[in-house]
Length: 164
Image 1: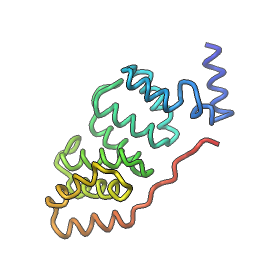
Image 2: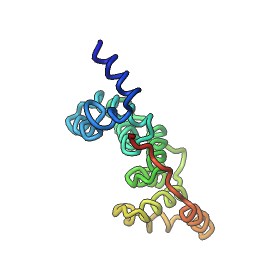
Image 3: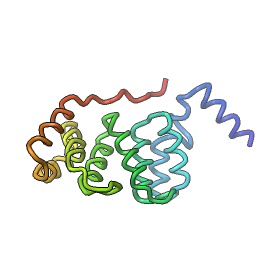
């Protein structure tokens, strides 16, 4: 119990500790995820996601999408993917695009939003997004393409929080 109190105090006083090592190290959390230690991974990713760490936000979405550590929750996963994407995290943009394109977690397909997220991911160099962009585009009207392209052109990533 005392160790947890000390760790909590250190996280408040020295926030970089939560990113740089121990149970909140993103690489250790990815290892826990890959070793199917989903509750450990969920707790750590969720903690880092609350500090607006894009990769952690993405993993919370991924775990929600697949039901790892928590029950499947597609709307929440989509929200997390969009949030990670807001910071320019390409995997988040890609997954938000795919979910919109195929209507996963939505009442209907969101081809225009799917196209937008995939185009942004494509612009940032995501290879799989490049493959899906033509498919998304062929399901849009010229007006929808123009609106989506305007959003892509005006898109700017948020600046993620970094440890001090």
